[in-house]
Image 1 (cartoon, rainbow, N blue to C red):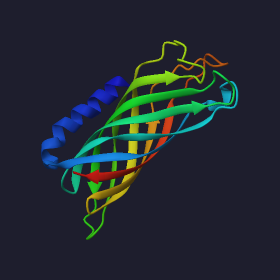
Image 2: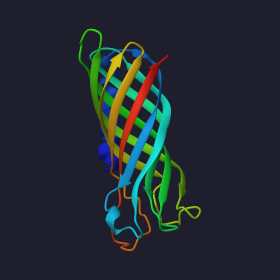
Image 3: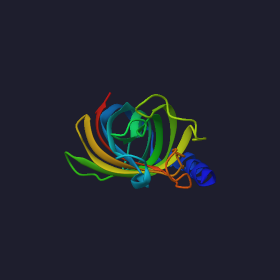
Length: 189
């Protein structure tokens, strides 16, 4: 999977000059709704974690372009059983290709690409998460869409985690990947 991610990033760097120069910097913030695959076998009553995401984004101009961001995002699961929550906080760095439709007044866009996430903190509701050999850097695929109008952008993004989070669970052989929906507002600078 790392080879695929590395190859995709290499492809992006190869085509970036053809997609136009940087359009500008934007501040992005919004809500994060997260879960993990196989959450039904977590002990207790694991459920979605609602959090936030905030950061900066850089985008190129033109109909075919690229975007690069740095976002602090909250993900994981919560549980009513003490010690069974997994609240993970990351710095997400997505790099994506973006297609913008030239509609007067509004500029709808869609994008897709890879994302690297760097774990900043993990708590389990009773303290720090147990050491389960969990990777501190994870891979994901990102797909999203939105609309620009004036200096404001509204967008929705789905993050499909590819790295096993190795959460300590009842079934130690299970694999857990992060799944997140982000609803973001961007303000151009």
